[in-house]
Length: 259
Length: 291
Image (cartoon, rainbow over all chains, first blue to last red; front, side, top):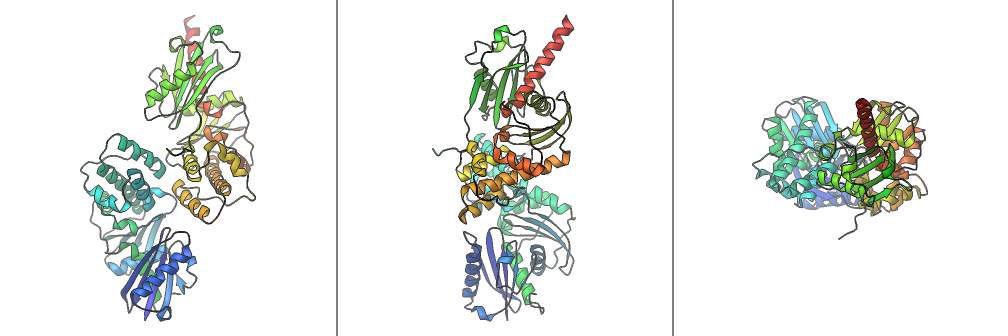
């Protein structure tokens, strides 16, 4: 029996296929002009990886901000629910899940069974989301995937005064003009997002183990900043961007079948 | 080099028929904002000459440049000015100022001059912040609220959209009203999110005017929520650069159901005018004390 989880985020679609509780396929597509096309594309790619046809998928659960766009889903799960489920499956010791996507950041408190106890979400402001790093990478003229590596080279903490991504962009430009090394600016950027996210997480209370997922968790510089800000170690799975899609697939695999 | 759609024309003016040589008191106000700087020269408390320029990366120089330009062609020199007040975000960088006064106080005072003593609520929509100021009939501040943390609801946010849509910033207001049907606003909480929403709308075939209408509406909505926190008492007036954007002001008036006052004056001068008026009052008081 194969179940599918489809996570339609602000920027990318992520698909996870589970066969008898094991992940057998993962695929990813960036949403360009057409959300529908990205969903179909990512789903087809996931099926192709295991040579399965659509008919072989028993149940599909959709999650993410764009979950309503998955017309062929059997059921749906909120981002918070999916993320918590995925994180608990990956690390059963998790008490706090921090999930940072392109345009949203979430902190979720879960119990030992993976049940959501409390959560906080920022979907109003780019300062606590991946979009912030992207905007700053553009200002720095550095590929966004290089930002993590770059910031880890920094030995000097430079303060960043602006909270807003638009104002921070001007601040980054001023820092460049002042000949501040790019690695120090990159670190300042990650420290700024980490600060925002940790202060949001503190509202619900942070308990170990802390697991960080979402697209931004692939950025080692951001993880380093989170660790320093929290003054504790954190766990990051191998495929952090698929955590919510995994949670949705797990939901689809339950006896109630993704309803 | 590509066209910079956010860029507006800098300007200066000497009021026709005015002569500084006939004045007993010459004062100046210099408002160094995060985006633009203005210098205003007053002769006996009346507007004599002014300039408005883009603030460069060097605030002290921006203050000096604005002042030099306001003086240009008048035969007047800085030494002849009795008293100068600096205001705005860069007020401590006005090296030739005798005193610095906050932009909150100066905007209220300036709005009182521009719009008259009936003004009780001033909305200042600046380059990187937005303020709601309540004041009395003398232009004295009674309370205020400010957003300087976030670009939503500021001129800088509008510049981002001018660049995105490639519409000169001064034409945005007019174009935003040239639409068939009023669209739903884009995100009013974050310019970055509004921009990504707008990019999607453009791709889906929305005309530019409709997209800019959706942003003007978002900006108006954002500012209204700030206004509501302080409470709006009539008369209501808008100062700062966005006051010149009819796309935002008309939607703001609609949502608030209060019509803002109108003026012939340049609304971007409010801070500098207020500063020059403070300079005038300070000098007059000092002179009276001596006599």
